[in-house]
Structure formats: structure tokens, C-alpha cells
Length: 359
Image (cartoon, rainbow, N blue to C red; front, side, top):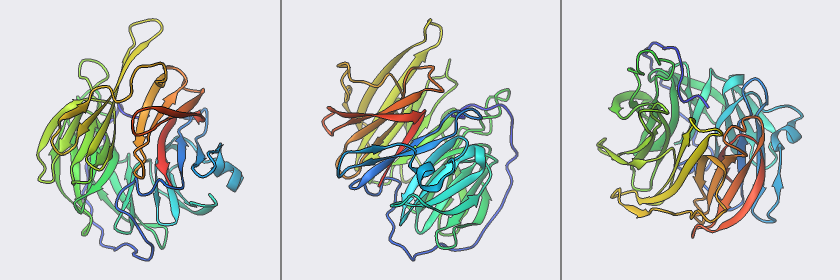
């Protein structure tokens, strides 16, 4: 949603020293399961249409809409950004409502409402849930107390987060600083999870956003550019913090040592606007292109893709799509492809589906 912004924030310093819970069983990344089902996060439209959560049941193949509202009798809130399934709960970052919801993964009942400023990205590792706050901070949530136990400054307008190698990698966009050329962005903050301190900044391209990690500890970041003269590019950060370009792309997902790249380029000068979309795979350890048309243009491609996610259990690829390029208040779709790239299902989702979270 908020990839380019228009005002600057000041980088501050901060430390926190509380530890996280080890009372539940955890896995190290966002994509931790994928055998039971999946949650679809619908972003809605800021101030116009509230967000929602849908659920796909892999056992019987059913798709249920608005499961959060049905279970709790209330709206999810304004502009959810990201979510993570961890331990027994699903955690959902809702930007416009300044809240992270902790809900039971089975019943979808609310277990806690955790206040936090402008939450965007979210990930979980080592017994904690981490949230990037658009006000320039990274928050840490303890999964036993379900409360924020620490906040550290990471840089203006942090976006997505990935965990790898004992560190958190936080994309810093400086997205409000349009007039200054986003000068204090163009970096990924590297945070030591054990001490919860920022150890360094890693220089990357313009407007970094989506972040993911592979099984070898490589981290990938989409630098979205300026939606004009500077195109989007996917960059790789090796475990020793070396940065290399992979190729053009606007969305990424990783499974094992395969990197899946969505590249959706819209030409706004045409009427109506037109888009060219490609889906490629790379060997994430070498950066070599392995399939330049992973999803073939055979009439089954999504009309306006915004996000891709891969099921860790079987390699199925899920693509979130708007109904049209400008369908910002219309219900969208989620397309499911098997590991060979064949279309399996198309689900009717809510307004602006933006993420699939595996259960």
C-alpha cells in the first residue's frame, strides 16, 4: 500500500533488553507450515473499506470469507499490512488501526489486542514476534504476555522484515521523503535478535519493500524504485552482507533454495492502463535464472497481481490479484498454481488481497 510516502521521520536511538518466550513450539520463518490450510489477508481500501481475513481449508477445499469478523463480531480494522502464523496464534498487523491482533489459529477468536504505532511488516523467530512501525521503530512482542517488550529505532519508514542467521533484516524506505530523494532510505537495517540491537545498515536500491529469506540464509529484498524512471529490482544479501542484483521484480517468495519472482510493470500512459507481467524462478544460492516463464501466459494468469507466496509443504504458488489494475475497492482473487505452474484453483477474495499466510 504505502511504498512511496511524502514526509520525513527522524532516526532515533533506543535499546531494550527483555527476552522472549520459549513456552510454545515455533518454526523460524513466516512460511512455517502449509499442510492444514491458509489465511488470505485482504487489505481493503484505507478509510473506505476495512480489511478482512479469509481462510482456505486444505482438507475439504472450502474457502470461507471474513472469518475474523465472523468469529469476533467486529471488523479487522483499517488497512491490514501483513500477518504471521506462529505457535498457536495468527498475528495480524493492521496499519490504520494501530494494532496487532493475536488470534487463535483454529477458532480465529481474539486473544489479545496489542497496540502499536502504524504496524507494517511482521515476522516471528526465537519466541518473539517482530513488527516494523512506520514511525521509524521496530517493536518486539513477547508471545506469553502478548505485549510489546521493546522498541528500537531502525530508520525512517521501515516496511517488511525477514529473519535469518540470528538477525532481523528490516527494509528502510524513507518513503515520506519524496522531495529529498528518499536519501535516508535505500538500506536494510540488520538487527541482532539476541540483544535486540541494530548492528548495521546494508546499502540497497531505491524504495526497499518486500523481504524474504531462503534456506541457505540468503535474504532477498525488492527495491521498488520510483514507479517511473527507476524500475523495481530484486537484490540478494548474502549471509556476509554482500549485495548483488538478481533481476527485475515487484514481488518475491522463497522455498528451499528456489526464489520465485513476480514482475508486474504497469504503463499508466495508456488508456486504460496496461501491464506486462512475468513470473520467473532463480536458484537462490547462485542467482542463476532457472525458469523465465514459470507461469505461462496461457489465459490463466491473474489480471492485476500484487503479491506471491509459496506453500512450504508442497511448493504450490499463490498469487494475490486485484480484479482490475484500478480495482481498488473491488473484490479480488487468489490464484493457486501447483509446483509445475499449472492453475489449480481461483478463489474469490476480499478487496485488495495482499498476502497468503500458511497454516
